[in-house]
Every structure is written in C-alpha cells, then in structure tokens.
Length: 119
Image 1 (cartoon, rainbow, N blue to C red):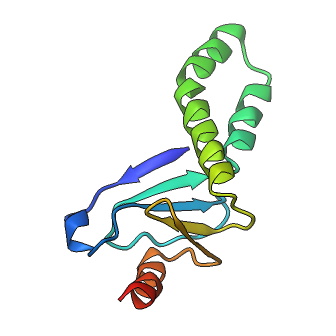
Image 2 (tube, rainbow, N blue to C red):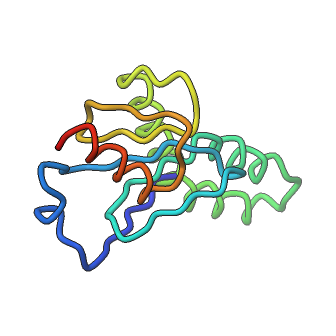
C-alpha cells in the first residue's frame, strides 16, 4: 500500500532533495518526521490476500475485492519500484529515485545522513 504524507515543509526547502520513498514492512516501526514521504509496505499483499482468503459471504467478498483493487495496484507499483531500484534489504529509503540507504526507518535520521553526504 502506498500512502502519501504531506507536511508543511515544502520540498523546495529540502535543498536538492526532491523525493523520499520508504520501503518497509508493516511490522517495522517507522518515523516519518516532517517530510513528504511515499511509503511502500512490502508485505501489504500478504495482508490483502489473507482478507480475501477469509470465509465470507459472496456479496461481502465481492465488495472487499472492489475496495482492495486500488491497494493491490499500489502494492504492485511499489514492488515494481523496489525491483527497479534493485532493493535487497528492508527498510530502505530511496532519495530522488537514485540514492538508497538501508537499515534506517526514521526519515529525519535518513535525511540528516543524506545531507551530510551531499553538502
């Protein structure tokens, strides 16, 4: 599932940092801070599938399928991005679609480390 978090801090104020994407699992705690971050929950498909596997009346199941279509689409977009970025570990933070930082799920900390490298 991809969720866009907006903040009162404009991207233009983050120097040349234009996009931040966090790839993580729902079980991993993350801190987004005050930055606009696209979050990809890489185990979201498993959670969606488990909902569909539940024994539910056909009409309710049909409603759930319709409602979860966008979540599946978002998940597969995230998976495609992760493959494009050749991510090998989670959590991973991707800056501007180019630089990848592994092992940091606190966006404030990741941005601080990124800025040190790019100042």
